[in-house]
Length: 284
Length: 253
Image (cartoon, rainbow over all chains, first blue to last red; front, side, top):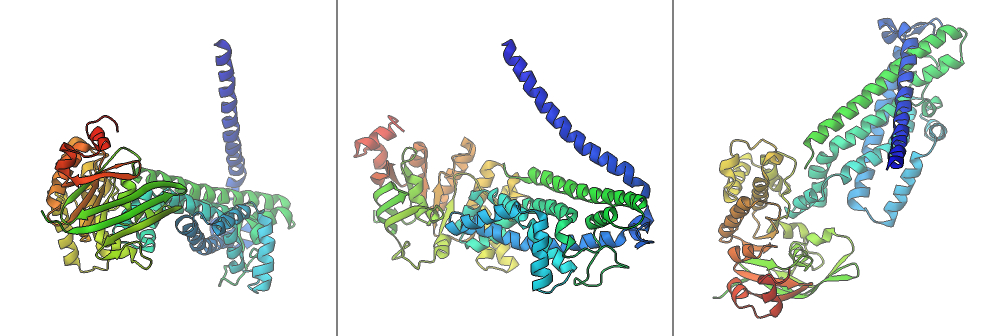
C-alpha cells in the first residue's frame, strides 16, 4: 500500500510540475514583454504614424493594417469554412469524397505558415495580379485559418443533438430548412468561438503576409484593398532586423509585441467568455 | 364494427446492414383509432413506427422491402414527396425535443416552413394547438420564454402541440412517456384519448398497462416479427399466441 501511494504522489508531483512550468512560461512571457514594452506605450504610440526612421511617432498604420488583414481573412474564411463543415457533417458524412476532403483539411492544418506565404505570393500576388496588397494578404491568411474554422464549425455542428434534426424533419421541413433554421442557430456560438480563436492566429502571423501584404513603412493609412499595409507582427520583425537605431527600435518592437499580445489575449478571453455563456444555455 | 383502414403495411422487411430487424410485417392502422405496438426491447417496434413517416431514411446503411400504403400510394415509391408525407404523418419522440427557442417559435416553426405567414393565423394556430395539447393555460403568459425552461412533461406536450400545429392526419408516438413521471404520463394518456377523435394514432410503448389503457388495437412484436394483432381487449384477455400470453403476463420482457 505504502509503495502504491508513493507512486501516486510521484505521479501527482510530476503533473503539478508540468502545470507549473506551463503557467510559468506564459507568466514569464507576459512579464518580460510588459516590463520592456510598457515604457514606449502612450497615446501617441497608438495613434501616430512612425517618424524619424521608426524611432519616433507611433504604430497606428500597423494597427490598422492588422485590423484590415484579419477582418479580410475572416470575411473570406468564415463562409467557406462554414460551407465545408456543413457539407461534411450534414450532407455527406460517410462518403469517400468526404474522407478525401477531411484528409486534405487535416494536412492543410499542418502546412507551415511560410509555405502559405509563398503560395500567396505565387497565386494571389503574381498569378491573379493582386500585387502586394491587403487583398492578397487577407486571402493568404484566410487560407491559413480555413482548416481551423472548418474543424471548429464541424465540432459545433456535430454537437447539435440529432433529436433536433429529427424533430424538424418530422414537421415536414426540408433538410436545408432544418440546417438553416435549427442546426446553424444552435451551432453558432461554437462556430463563433472557433472564428475568434482564428482571429488571434491571423492577427499574429508574420510569414503569410511577409510577401503578400506587409511593407516596412507607409506614410499614412491604406486607401483601398489593393494597397500594401504595415502590420504589427511584420513591424516587429522589421524593427528587429533592419534600420540604423537598433536599441531604440528594440524598445519599440517590445511595445508592438505588448500591444499584439494584449489584443490576442483579449480575443481569446472573448472566446472563453462566449463558450461559458453558451454552456449555460446548452441542452441538458 | 366496420373500420376504415388508414395505413396498410404489406410484407415489410427491414435490414440494418446485413441484419434483418423486421420480418414480413403486415399490419393495418385504422382511422381515428389508437393502435399500440408492444414488445420487448429490440423487437423492432420503434423501427416499424419510424418507417411510417420514413424517419429511418436518415439512418445510413438501411434497406426496406415491402409496401406501406397511405392514400392509395406506397410511401416508398420513388418520387414520393417525403416532406409532404411527413406533414401528413407527424411524430412525437421518446425524449422531449423542443427546439432551443421560445415556446412561440417552437410552434410557429412548422407553420413558417410550410409557407404560412399572416400573424393572425399563426397566433390562432399557436393557441389552438396549445389548447389541443392541454398546455395553453400553463404557458399562455410566457409564450416568449425558452421552451427549455418547461418541465419534462410540459416539454413533451409542447412537442405534441408543435406536431398538431402543422395539421397532420396521423400522429406517431414513439414511447412518448419513456422519460416522464407518472403524473405527466397520465396527462399524455388523457390527451391521446382526446386526440383520437380527430387523428389516427400509432403509439409504441414499453408499458403494457399503457397500451391497455389508451389503445383500441394492439400489435405484439417479437424479434422483428408481428406475432399477434387485434382489438386491445382481445389481446389482453384471450391472446391466441403463447408468446403474446407469456409477454403480457410478465413471464418475459
